[in-house]
Image (cartoon, rainbow, N blue to C red; front, side, top):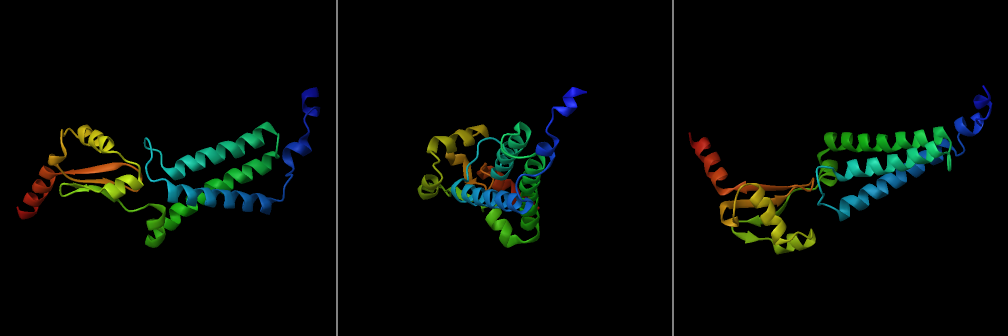
Length: 176
């Protein structure tokens, strides 16, 4: 039972920082990072969104501090994790309830190619090369842009491609 007396229970369980300060710090860091990432990044690798990545990184850091006992008590770290998750959930709820907020949280699609022309300005602003567009076209089973009606960079960072024959089929269904 000596192992129970070796633990500094007060240090482990009593917050070292005012709970309101933890809440404010967590909120400000999360919101500032979210806004910066939202304004700077559109393209993402894989299927992980900016919000998901931000939450994972911040939770890992907050939990690490609480687990290692180097910086804060367990309640300090747990409250910070709860604040981060709470803001992520609250922003999702706001976006669902208010279309204006959703437009900020999830940017509209950006046209990269349409009607036979590349949108070089949009490509440059997102650092997308012609080869990257062609890679997406090839992934759809096409060999050239002549078969493509539209290429757009969606708000989640994925490219969507509308093929010319898809448009014709869709119009044919509308007429039938």
